[in-house]
View 1 (cartoon, rainbow, N blue to C red):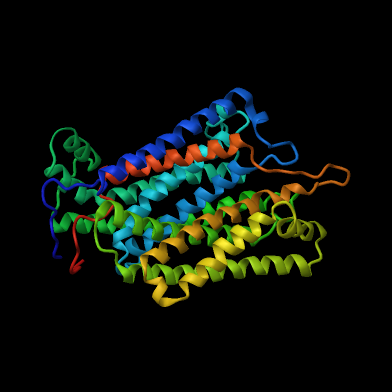
View 2 (view 1 turned 90 degrees about the vertical axis):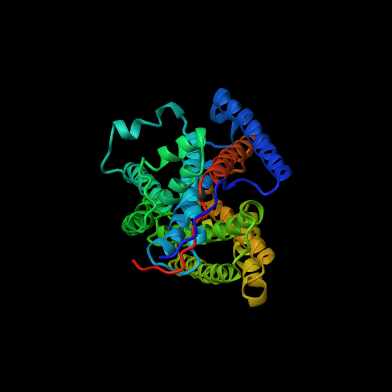
Length: 425
């Protein structure tokens, strides 16, 4: 295996100091506003929200399932390189693993803020209920975090050792600690890392599909009082939209990171392959949603049909038509099905950003409309739109994720420091 060792003093930060200051200033604004909103949430409780006994799940739950899906989707994108060995994806596999970790942390922050008693967040680990889907899901999260953390370690250990050898002071100690004092950079050591990276990735695929994002869908599907959720296709919808969001986000991140941090040339073949994958995932998402709608209509299930009417023509119609149909499906398809546009970074970024934002609308459509209709005759109809506290606190939590990723991007070798020219494994 031929490699190119990076020179001493590798700079992992921003190309522009001015942009770096602007970026950290933007994050500081998000964190400051989010801290104020969180203070209001802590002092006033759920009265600061529009959540009620009729609609107990709102924006925080929608963002929670969005970021869990983003985490699983990013991890599965990384396995295209680490497990299946698709060419060119080594440039983004570490980034995908780190995004997976950060996204899961952000998701857990969202569900923590949503808890009526935030101090009871540890109770599922103390009083386990093995008949509870939620209990299984929480423990799957812990195992999943271990899988993606281990994958990231084996993926970048050799480059961490190289950085430790070319650094001094605090950075050297941090890099040495992150290698767990395995500082070998020999071909044999790297082959060992790749073998374990592949094994862990293989184990992580069913975990992420069936227990993390699929299990997330199960949490809704077992709610028999909500016929719209109580569907065998619901977990499948979660999986497909997670893959769609994860792939789009990694395409967006690859182009922006390459331009702003790495200063490298964008691989147009890579963005073409990812764009083609996005086309397939969009079509799959449309097909699954259409099948779900068709089943609802031909089964003449009144509650489910009424829920679809709320989604398409009620107070949540903005989310369905503008975000789900427009931003997640139609607009990116127009851009990506044109081959010359698909290979251009600016169009790839616009399409990926549109999908990432559109899937947020998909998550709101999954969570809110089913709660609008009363579960029993005579009970009131629900109504929900997030308050300023919910929106601002959500942006603050996203700011935490941006800060964590930025620190990682400036300190960790999330882009490989070696170029593999031949693999003799």
